[in-house]
Amino acid sequence: MFIIRLDGLISRYMGESIAKLKLIFDSMYQHRAVYLFDEFDSIGSHRSYGNDVGEIKRVLNSFLMNIEKDESNSLLIAATNIPESLDKALFRRFDDIIQYPLPSNKEIAELIKVHLKGYLLTKGKPVNSLAKEAVGLSFADVSNACKDAIKEMILKDADKVSSASLLKFFQSRKTQYNKSIET
Figure 1 (cartoon, rainbow, N blue to C red):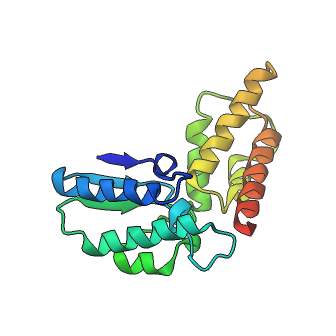
Figure 2 (cartoon, helix red, strand yellow):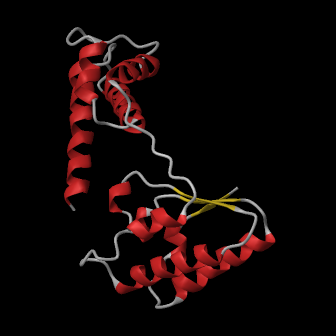
Figure 3 (cartoon, rainbow, N blue to C red):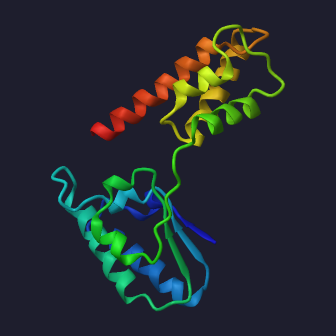
């Protein structure tokens, strides 16, 4: 499996990104493997977005052309956590589109319990109520909020994880997510 780091693919020099992309597609013929383009929205955004630079649009066009010509035995995966930002032409190029839904209230409660296992929670909201406050967040966001609450407990030299702290970190992630959708 090869993980394609898009920060290494994108260059500030005109045409260099497309040349690097071509090298990746050429290697797909020589090395049968899984090629994962993570955070694909960085190059796969709608071409009609006015605030995008021309080079990124050319990279996306090149990607689309390379995918059309690809006859290798390799598997290509593009992953994103903001599929609504992707150019519609991409969805026609991939054989399968797999979407992972956000966790339910019950799944969030279980995840909180897993992360806080071995820690005491301050009196306040029970785990099920805390989980309701995290609805709309991804598994990763809930996990990271739990880790942040544990770190804060340690830094404050407390003996329990604060439910207020956990709520603060859930809200912080919701705010970050909403800001990223707006831009």
